[in-house]
Image (tube, rainbow, N blue to C red; front, side):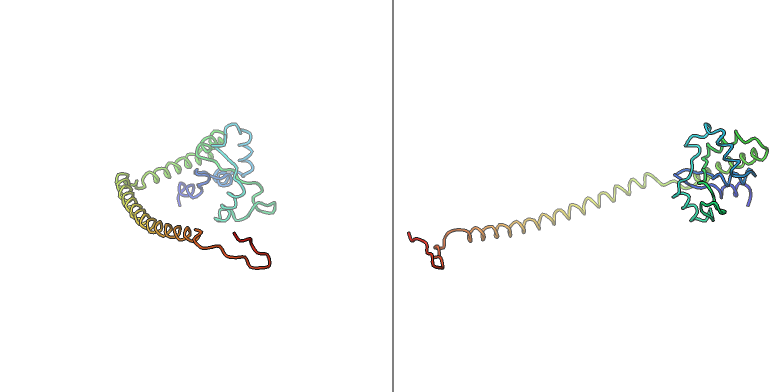
Length: 194
């Protein structure tokens, strides 16, 4: 695997951005992760949140589950702090604070890897927008016809239901009308007859 492919394998998609992690960068620059992070902290004004951010526990766990990190966060061999992620702009800024020959060569390779990824993404086939719009219109018209049929059937059901409700109302009105003669009370106390 050549150097650019090695670097591309260490570029991750986190928070919708392509980033590299501090531990991978330290490995490429041939320094310790702690020394890399110390250099960054000495120049922290160069790294706003859109250039560098620290992973959350959830993001770290997802990377760990994807076997990027074999150990969790611990003082017994695992990562002691949540890693920092550097965006492409952060990597460019990192090249300004690391001045060794190795750092310069690695930064050039990293920039080439990001350019190669962008080229691959640009080479992907673009959807045919005109055909998609025509298909959406066709689907919309079919859906509109289906809804009209359903509403027509609904109106037929409503008409028959309305007739049934009218019949029930008429029957209830007849039952409530005082056509029957009143009954005499049962028991010892009788109503006065009129």
